[in-house]
Image (cartoon, rainbow, N blue to C red; front, side, top):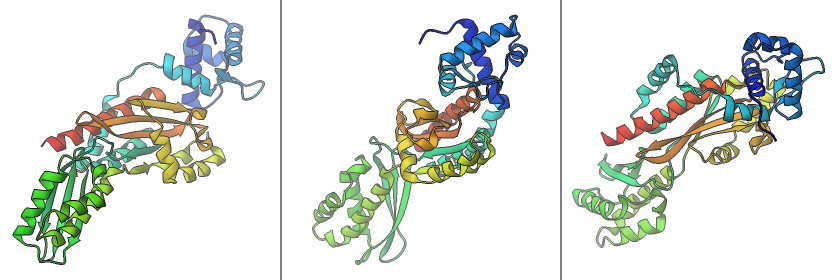
Length: 342
C-alpha cells in the first residue's frame, strides 16, 4: 500500500475527527467547511474515492458521505493524530478522584477505574499489582486471642493481605519469635509465587519443639502468598456502553462478554507495550470487533505491575482519551511506589 499524499492525510484526519465528533458520514462540502481547503468539491470527492479504494474509508450508502474504516482509524492513530498532553481540568479530576484511596493499592486501582470510566464514558478494565518480580516484603503476626492470630502480608508492589489463623496450641512469645525467625530467614525477599504448601511444611518441620504450632501459621502464609500472586481483574463503567448508538443491539452481548473473567484476562494479557491500542478486528474476540481497547501499564518501584485501560466503540476520541489513560496509569504507579517508600 502506497504512502498517502499530504492532501489525502489531511482529508483522512478531518473525516476521522468529524465522524468521531458527530457520528454522521462526512461529505465533501462538510469537509471543505471543516478544513478550509481551497479545492473543489469534485477534487475532494476524487480523493475520498481513492481513500475508499485503498481501504481507509467506508461508504455506508451510495449517496452518503464517508466514514473511517478500521484501517483508517489505525492510520490516524499511528500517523495523523496530534500528540496532546492531558488538559488541566481532566488532570485535576483524576487526581481528586484517586487521592483518597492512595494508601490501599487494590482500592486505588478500583477507584482509578471508576474515575477513568466516568471521564471517558467507556468501560474500564484494570488489574491489581502482580507479576513475576513481586516478592514478599513483610509479614507480621498480631495476637488477638490465646489461640488466634491475625497475619498481615505485604508484597513489594504494595498488595496487603490479612488472614485470621487459629492454632491448636497456645500462642505465646516463643511461638511468635520462632515465627519471625522463619519469616526473616525463609520468606522475606522471596517471590510470592515460590511459597508453596510443601516448602512451608518443610520450614515448619525445621522448628523441632514448635513444629506442630508452626504448621497452621505456615499454611496461612502460603494461602496469603497465593492470593497475592495472581492479579485481580476489575471491570467498571460497562453500562456506559449502552450510551453509544454504534453498538445498537450488540451492546448487551458485549456486556455479557465483558462480565466473564477468563476472556477479559486473555484480552488484558495480550497487550505487551507500555501503551497499546487494538482497533476493531485487531482484537482476538469477535465480541470486540466493533470496539477499540486502549491499555497502559503502571509500574511500581520500576517494574511493570499491572494495567489500566478502556473499552469503547471504534468511534472514540483517541486524541483526548489516550493522554488520560497514560496520565492515570503513571499517577497510580507513583502513588503505590510512594506509599511503599513511606
